[in-house]
Image (cartoon, rainbow, N blue to C red; front, side):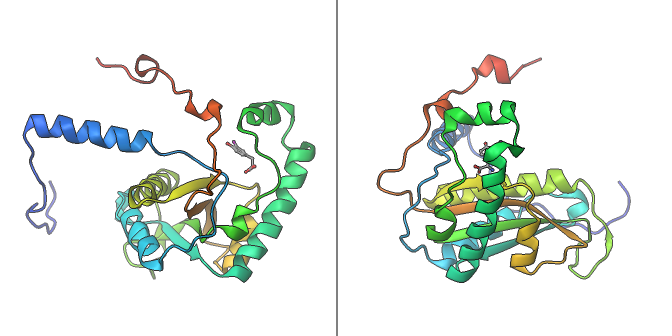
Length: 225
Ligand code: IYR
């Protein structure tokens, strides 16, 4: 390896193989209890919880460690209202035909439609932005690498961190998402909205579509060589 500064790995924890299996299986059960929901309570969620989850997301690996992401955590009623109005406008045209028949057919088992009340009522929306240029320091203007992969991993971390903390989430990707850039006041030349996450407590009557519970068998999703 080329000459570079490094420090000893001191925070790796080694477990017995029995404990590893137990931990892996406990973690699996926790992941399997995560469900995307579309009906949120307006019960408040402290900012500190969201902050810790975003820090977990921002610890994700990224191309050249450039951390090409920015998270906008939205609690403001006014901002949430603006986002709901803009997203519902787009979703109305999407569901009225822009999506095309094949896409609309694929969504039928989920029961989704253009109404997104949770964008206003859930305590937190987190808009995730990806950055084309950057670097290890925010002010850098270098090329970022594997931006989509990096932000995808960070988003996965965020979803899991929120679930682990005890919150329910919904990944929302209205198309196009450029309205988020304006509403969140982000730099439209360098940043692209990647996803909007809704986070909060589920409503009392929250449901999970049966369709979402059908998971491919292990043999279908994995191969050991
Ligand atoms: N953005 C729309 C449509 C939608 C698209 C996919 I792919 C989904 O998995 C779910 C919904 C909406 O949120 O209703």
